[in-house]
Length: 379
Picture 1 (cartoon, rainbow, N blue to C red):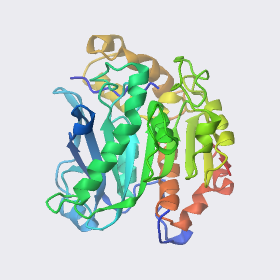
Picture 2: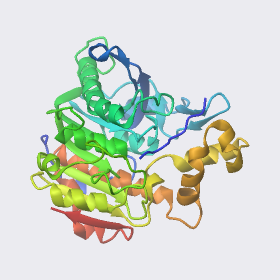
Picture 3: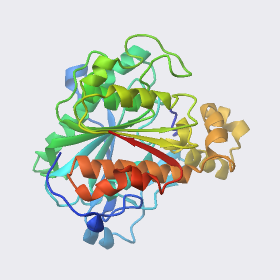
Picture 4: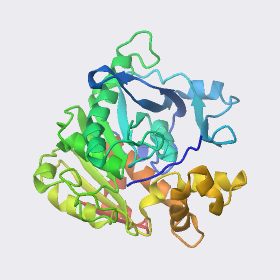
């Protein structure tokens, strides 16, 4: 089966800047990986595949240093993407009260669409749960746009409920590991709209009060401001919806995105009038697909003998355009886009979910001045 990332689109504690881990690199923890499929009995027994990346204490990671790394299936059983850091079923860090993040994938995408970001966040101490939204994923894509929108925020709430229940279960590897009072949501494209919806309410769902900070990456705000036009009340967000958001928000996007133009982030930045803090990170030269595993997937297909003109035979024709605009040698380097996405996401969640004020250094316009591919706006 082909594994293809298709995009449709405050706590306690503090530290000084001299003491913080660089958000531009992997953090101090090892990275563990697990996957499970809980069933939401309150919604017609809705199954939801969930991938979880989580921190592993250094002594456990060192003890497993010779163990095989996680292998993410891409073209099963022919090929898989081999992680350089993640370990299957490694012991969860023993720290109590760890911070849970939910990642939501793009329209018709997959839960593993942003592996580099997931591993980076876990290495910095976050537990990251990424659901594959049934009915709106590559392998289950029967929902209409409105049906998919209506399921998104309830899926986030269900995953939060499920992970916190695991933290309450003495027989579970995540027992007593999670802090129910501080949860973050991060998402890409349609998943970015999901993150906004978790804070503002969306498609008939109320916001989840446990969500304390969000990072929408390439979100649609104005339903008319995208190339794949979908109409209706769920195709964007009104100023009233955005004005309901009082928690901190970081908006990330690429200036060369023709699917969800960067003007959506500018509109959101202006209309988030009540948010505790708002950051807008424009990555100069990045397209819509610079924030996922597009190049890893494409290069693996080529390595195992499938050239771009053959991808349609695998059901991967949707990868052809993004491969040209994201992975060619003359476009903005995807490794740099990934580094910047990771840097600002880590710094933001460290600051606004963990209260580590040392990360303010990376969230100010002075720091952005040393990153030539970034324009940062703050309010």
